[in-house]
Image 1 (cartoon, rainbow, N blue to C red):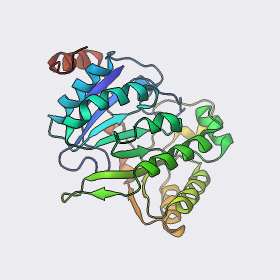
Image 2: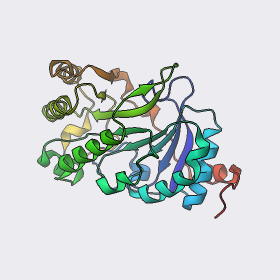
Image 3: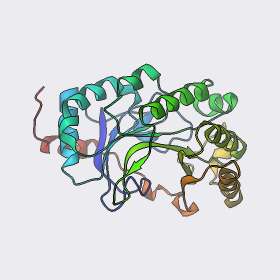
Image 4: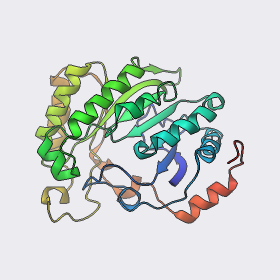
Length: 277
């Protein structure tokens, strides 16, 4: 089920740049994080259902927007269908395919994407099992996610960029720094530095409370400046040196995509049928 297909200008500079990233948002998610800012479609999924062949048509349509890449957002629960669609469309795309995931992934599913995905954009959300249980009901998250990231790195061992600075191959690990959970952030950075000190890390400060949380009051405020500074300082202290940082002003709903089922239907009506049904 697709919730949005559109150019997206707010990814990391090497993904969006001046061209924008061709974002395809999949409805639903196999993680239900308490702080999800796309709650409207991740926890309460809605949109338009498509077949794998129709999804391949969507890939060609997005390519024709002139964007820098095909950006598959929250794809995990649709990985098998995505693999089938990419097998059809990949030879015609000519731009990188980005797999933008929460990393709660089975490595066997990722292996089916080997050779089809050019850039992996995984989150590494939590380290501590109690934190992961509290915030996403997934106490095994860290073990699952780090195994998935290791498989992504196996498939894309080298980060490569074109002459204009757009990433063409590789892995960028994202981590959203959460209010009151900076110590968990530090443990994540410890693991990343041990795993690969050259890996690109996007350390994000964009959290804001999309809903009032009665169970975890800390989530009802934005990140303090000193919390984000502590995370950034720790990034360098552990020897990481490739990465992206954000201004605290990014913590606003102004950058959130809009999900409109009518607009999604309208987009699908415009897309030619190349691969049939």
